[in-house]
Length: 90
Image (cartoon, rainbow, N blue to C red):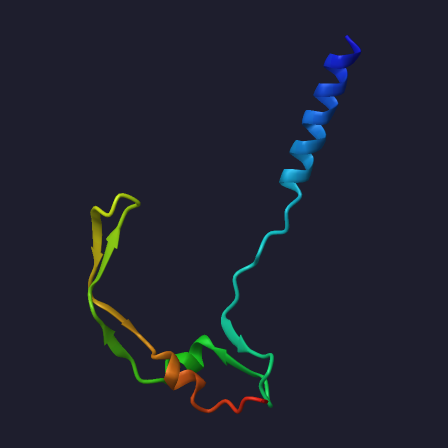
């Protein structure tokens, strides 16, 4: 009987630890920091001012190499455009 109580208590403790993980809240900005001279933060409104470019269709494969889906009509901001004004320390 004591073993059942021990395992029940162990189960609840493990469950509590699994539920107590930190949640990540969504943001409306992109922050670039680290080995740069001046950290920079882009808001969503600022990202809308950058020129967009079309992205080629992307084929999505599953673990067996079979085609599952194709992403079409995507647009985005080239990363080189965002990082072009950043000075790195090295």
